[in-house]
Structures are given as C-alpha cells and as structure tokens.
Image (spheres, rainbow, N blue to C red):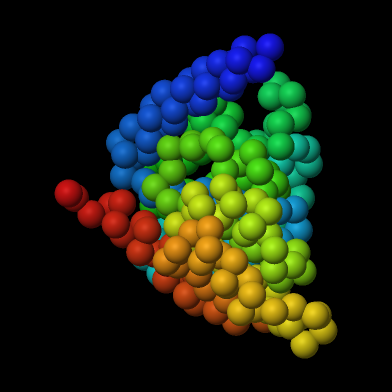
Length: 227
C-alpha cells in the first residue's frame, strides 16, 4: 500500500511538470514573466502586493492571479488598484485544494490578459506545505514569512523555504511588541537554504517594500530580455 501511494504521488508530480511546461511555453509566447508568491495564511501577501502596486512598477505592467479555496476578497482588493486580476477558487472543480498546481493555473489562462501585461504574480493559496511541491510554470518564487509565525518556521517547513528565490520577512513593524529573535530566524533560514536572498519588510508601513518592487522589476526585465 505504501508503494502504491508513492507511485500515485510520483505520477501526479510528473503530470504537473508536463502541464507546467505547457504553461511556461504560453508565458514565453506572451513575453511574460511569472512570479509564484507563497506564504502561510495571514502572512501579508495581499497587503504587500497592495503596497507595491499602489506606487506602480514603472514601465512594468502587472497582473495578478489570486488563488483561494473560496471567496474573492483578495482579488477585490487588487481590482481596487486597477490591476488586472483573475480569481481562481480551488473549491470550484478542484476539490478545495490547499494549493495551486499547474493544471489549475492552466484553467485560468483564458481569463488572463497575457498579451497586455509584463508580469503575472500568482498569489498562491495560504499554506506552507503543498504549494512548494507544485511548479506552475513560473520564472521565480518568492515567499512571505511573518515574524508573528516564530523563528522556527524554516526548520519546520524546509521545502517551502528551500524552493524559493526570495524570502520576505514581513511585519517587522511589530518587532517592539513581540518576543522575536530576527537573528535566529535568519540563522535558521541560512541553515535550510544557504545564501537565499531575503528582505526585511513591513507591508503596513512600507519599510523595505521598494526592495521587493525592484526585485519584481528585475525578474520581469530578465524574462523579457532576449537570450
């Protein structure tokens, strides 16, 4: 029985890889950069994106694919900033999954204005486990880690931290009010993903957000530069 479960999991990941490659081909044809943004629930992904998009990305035209089990609250917040946004709820035909996979993203492509934007941010379902396992055709991965989650999260959920290109340590405006050791968090992060780029930010106050804006711009420019 155990071997059967392993085989089923391997088959699912192989199928996901094939569909992710198809997504990637479509993104390339549209000359589009894609960032998969992940975190635990409530870490601040949406507020961080609001802070970035409120002042714009210069010459880069962004769009957002919002992943949630149900509801459109985050998508509504993006739409209020006049950012093209498509809602993808996993309860609708996908069994209420706690992550987005390549097939789910592919189902949303007809609703996305791929030819009209330069950067697509996929705001994944809030979860520190499953989203890390499924590539969706992205150029880069970023994750938001809130200081309210504690310093041990890289050690407890290493795959999420290990598969990301950027880790954003959010809610640092709360540091004076918490018993939190930033050095310990960064030490744990280095232990599971040596050398990974990280930024210390506050989506609420705007501290460090310019660095994330610059990172998104670099990802978009790299993807749009001919090889």
